[in-house]
Amino acid sequence: MKIENIEKKFLNLLKESKTKANFPSVLKEEVCRLLKQDVEDPKEYPEILKVFIKDLKKENLDNINVTSSLISAFIEAKAYEDKKELYDLLNQKELIEQKIEDKKEDIKKEILLFLNDIESDFEREDDDTKVLVEYSLNNVKLQSLDLLGILKETTMEALLGAIEKGGDIEGNIEEIVKSIVYEAINEGKLTKVRIAYIVRTVLDAAIEIADEDQAFAKEILNGTIYGSKRGISRAIGKFKNELKLIPNEVQKEIADELEKTKNEIENIEEDFINVLRESALKSKGISKSIINEIILKLDNTIEKLKRKSAETTEAIAEKIKEIKEDSVFENELTAKAVQEAKEISKEAKKVGKYLLEITKEIVNGAIKGAKEVMKKE
Image (cartoon, rainbow, N blue to C red; front, top):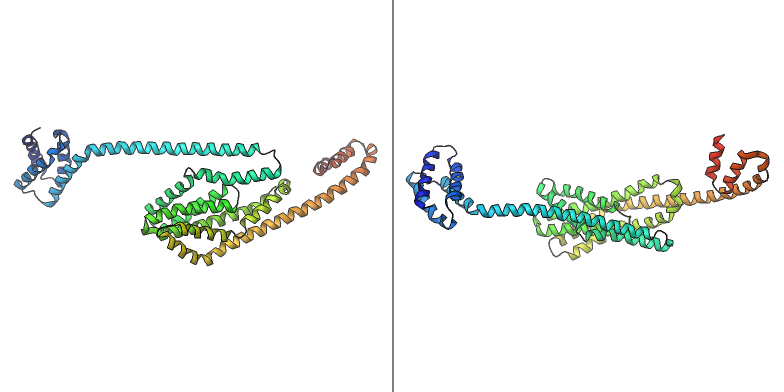
């Protein structure tokens, strides 16, 4: 359409809307619509804009507010097709991101199934091999999943969300990281290697964000480090509480396992500090100095983690002692019961079927069964 015809439409538009209270907004909307409908080539926009501004002057409407709205209309019309394409791409991006997340979950499940299958395949191997494979698998599980960026990616998304939310950024990050570290530790065995790996991965995510977004670097790193410490402490506390819930029938079987766990969490606070130092050394940005400052301040607060570790190792030691004492008592009881069974067996025919049933249970070592028979009377 010729510029003259477009100008006529513009003048009519001015006539109809210039008395409206929200004239600048109406002008922007209507001019944008006019340009999109009647101008095929955006290269004509500069020439048309000159004409429109002259018309505004003729109508004494050439103030900054109105002229700015007019120019904005041209910008919006010019960017319309590009924006439309951008929105289409953004929609596609969301779909692709969802597919990526779904695929990550699928791969995560496949890896876990595969590792569980390996563990099952070694169930019948000798104890040394079984324990070796079991410990190795538990360490590999988290590392295999992190190859997909799951732990680090989850942490980064959570930290960025806390920053965008604003408010008490440091406090919110501390709570978020505490939960992430706690849940990650609980996914497998309580070992030094796993705990160090989890903290290192979470801290790497925080360092990456802090070095880029330096405005909140201190809040990010303080929250991450103190949150990690609290997450470890909570996981150790949970293990301590669960000691009371171990069923009697499996206590002997897990005595060796408890001994290993006790060794794993001894001096865990030193391992935590070492991870912080390693991460600080690797950092090339602002995080390096901030982490070193935090390490100096940790001397007092780290005592809580140290105390929790000491309390838990002491509780484990007590549990192991209790299990061993019960085992000795049970062995003595069994030996005595067997001797009694031999004596009773001589008189079994005289006492009849009832007492014979008890005798058989004792001879078989099933003391519990014998007691149950006695209860039947």
